[in-house]
Amino acid sequence: MIISRTPLRASFCGGGTDIDWFSHSKENGGKVVSLAIDKYIHVLVNKRFDDRVRVSYSSLELVDNFEDLKHELVREAMRVTGVTSGVEITTIADVPSRGTGLGSSSTVTVGLLNALHKFAGHDASPHQLAEEACSIEIEVLNQPIGRQDQYAAAFGGVNAISFDSNGVSVDPIPVNCESKIREEFTLVFTGLSRSASEVLKEDPDDPDDKLNRLRKIRNQADIAEEYLNSCKLSELGVLLGDAWKEKRGISAAVSGSEIDSLHDEIMSLGASGAKLLGAGGGGFFLVHGESSLRKRLEKLEGKNRLIPLGMDHKGSTIIFEG
Image 1 (cartoon, rainbow, N blue to C red):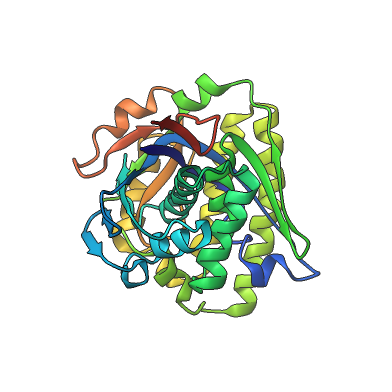
Image 2 (cartoon, rainbow, N blue to C red):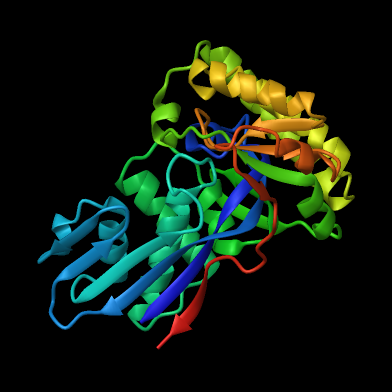
């Protein structure tokens, strides 16, 4: 049996600039500053007695031929690694695995690849895992997503991840205030979920305005990197609010009355800034405030679960082989 453990992620600034049409243009280039969190998706791969393939997630599939799997990410990860028969695969998530804005689909893909490569007797580097996950999601399955999530999941830690036509580079950010980050940043669940792909497929209200906003969001990533380097967390919190204003203006699909109302309530409790993670439409807000804020956030309705922003340092790892 092989078990991989792969972190989800929270992005501070730059989300959306990692999509190829933006980052590969000569005028732009993308950049995202993100943190791999200590919430995980585990993938278990075990040898079967027969040659069939059994996959257990929110559904259960048992097939004679892996090509018949409805779970596209599992099917394509099996194809890439050459493990195509005689296995049972199970995925287990610490938080809801769809529509949370935490990069769960890419985390699943990276974790699958890591576990299946190990099952086949190979070790895969973080760069290989991220590249293969991007290839599966973007090039094979034609998902309208970016490339930040795959790299955050594979590498772990806090990183400035840059994107252009030459590829992707990952620059770790040395952070000397990890405990303070955990105290002051909180993930607040909206109680809503929506597929990132569906949100990203929505046409912007104004394409030129979207481009200008993405350029501002790209520049905010440079500022976020500087604030994290110097542990200026209050300033970073305010920057989250600025990033949310730009992101919210891109498309009506990003927010809605319920999300706007929750944002206003969060700010009224004393937050310095808050932004919705991922493509939008639901999932988690990343919220900053003084350490006393989290107690006040508990006054929110029960569906708005709170998670301290803890950090993962290892990225996707094999935690069991036997």
